[in-house]
Image (cartoon, rainbow, N blue to C red; front, side, top):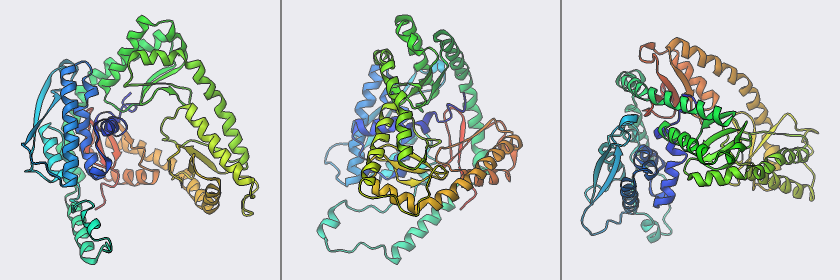
Length: 490
């Protein structure tokens, strides 16, 4: 279960909690740099109103304060400081993650005034007030602020080139940030005890969740129950209890779930694997309405192979694949994506033929169709990745230009994936780790580099840790230790 839940807590907010906060409370993406947005994720997770569903007073307070915080951060970005008295934001945070104290709250008050005009400093103060880690934000490179729009508007003919002086400044700042980067052995010595304590505190909760899950799987005759939403494990327990309550009031309707895999996820629908996805933010009545209509949703799942076959035939027998870490997609939407790409290619073929240099068959290659706004690229594993809206002519030209690259990456990945797995097993054994996982964004070559460096480390600080290879240093609420894959590089 630990592997399935490894991205709980702060890391999980990337997928759902932060996205909801941005949309709901008006946090414009352009208002902050990506680094500062990342630094805010633990805070969003700690105060997000959805975490206080059973406590309306705390939920409303946090919701109102988040709206004010959004406006304040926008003002910091725009350099438009209102001439009004300072305001105090009030947020409720849980005093402890333990099950016994989950309903105990602490009120945190944060002063907003014109005294702190640096967004980075303000966010650091915000995290410190909530007793959250500031390790990441202290490594963020300071950015030179300019009045937005004003300078460009007043000087339309000005040429904004990066000159040598700015390049030198940027180099110094980058070197200074690198010099402040923690040494792994030192950082582990300071944080390993905290990680072990947090893991110990959540062990009881994990046992309770496993027991509750086993009862539900047996009672509803499920194939399995999983949690892929990304929130922390307390939220997983809440989802399981909600489904358990439904067994007492809607037993007949839940018979549709027999022999199915139920996944608590960021959306409701039927996945490409046939899993029943239940959105963790939905009320129970919405779950029941969807479960009643599962047979209709299965209709789309049944036609997906036909759409995949049609696209394969149009592209000379190319394999239709899915990325290893492809986000879960509803079968209904995926069928529409396939149809759009097939239609675009048929339109292309109605005007001209495929290039002469193409082989008669493309079965050695794999194409992955993702969302309408996805990338057009060759993945690290050698797959062609295309958005559903890509015009046929552009897709054909892209495949033509990148066949050689796709072959090279497929060959490399065929070797790297076995080397990566062997190194993972060796590191777990030699460092006496409890678990070793990685971010989806860490490609095999990066993981191999990290694992090779790890084998040179002394094992005393790693013993019994759950280690997660990522892009930053952090200790998550469930005791998982995140380290960057390039921790040895300066």
